[in-house]
Length: 168
Image: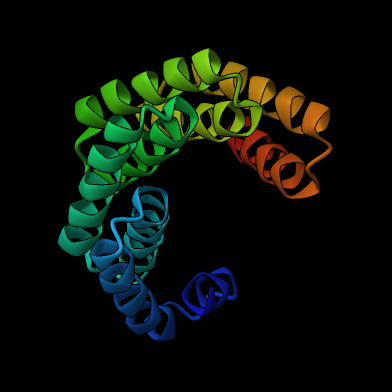
């Protein structure tokens, strides 16, 4: 819907209003899957706008919904986003635990894309806490997964992360 499209275009301030309206509709209709998707999208939008407590609240709601739905792949994606939020907030231990759980669930679900993204998140955390060798291994894993997925955006992101880590 429009809120997600605006978010994908980077127009997060505009996206929020549409997403909040969609969330009210999905909650009234008890549409569990779209409640998850919309809360996840709201979490991303608020995080990009710097409204981190709002982002965390929507990620938590998305996590609760995924748990209720039993969707491990979606739960892994939410946990990765939460982990990145914790990383931004400097809560490195919580971020590491959360992204490790994300990675485990992504593997169980067979979600290669979430495995790649979670590997990069964990790589960023390891890089920024001085564990460069571990970060490089995680970035290489992410790059291999991205290549297998034929996802040029993920390939570029993993390659950039590798390059930055090698500079350190």
